[in-house]
Image (cartoon, rainbow, N blue to C red):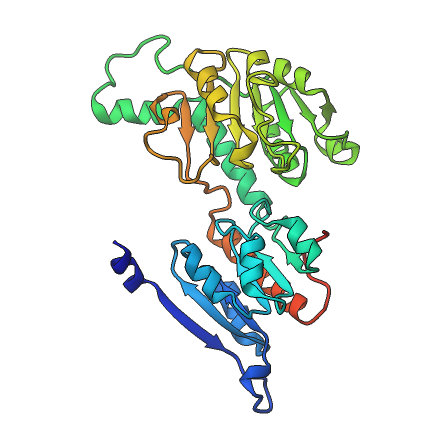
Length: 351
């Protein structure tokens, strides 16, 4: 298996000499790109004429030992969320590493304390995926609440018999209360789209009230307890931080939710205690759940959540549109170039 995968991975070196004159390639910053990123970002790197870069030319994650070998001596690193950038990687890279650009809005895969200590700048890709994530969240919410996966399965396997009064009934958005955990741009974008479904009320909770964002969707700030008790549909949109790790659990949330509630998570898998979620779903404590993110990823097919008809699990595809992924790769490339030149990044994480 290892040999066959190795054959498929073509490690390519791409160089771009400075325009107008020949320059010693040894003086160009060296960059490693840990994945075959979408073409718009690669085009920006190739045409920049400001660096030399190596690429792990595969859709599959780079093996850890290969990453540790390839980052040695690099000035910059462009990574994705599957690469754990920790002290081990930074030690392997050495003191020349000055910039890390991640093609993601989340940064829980980066050891921020280590990066700050070593004065390594970090670029990331927020905002450009807002629309795609909001659209997928609504698609997942509707799929879960209207039991579309179950219905499709019944139609394909002979379960579709005579019309029955309550067969495959789900829950409507009209006149419902929608709760949001973590009201940022994505949460607002979700609510704006849901308005067309005649939602009665939007509520949210966060580390603190966010009146400017809340005003745009006429959302009310409530406690976590009130959010759990009132929400007919609950969407998780918060970042994964030490404070939000496992925050969606039996004690804080599931035991207080309605047995008709639908739980949706398109943020990070780590904010949910999956054992507690399984118990809530399997006992009828809540009506259903739709997950685009899990722990681990991929979730093993033997995981008990996959046995539940009222749980829809997707393989982390919230940002998976051609436009969004290309925009993410372009922003990641531009962050990297700006950082290497000592200029402000378009989107820099303040450490």
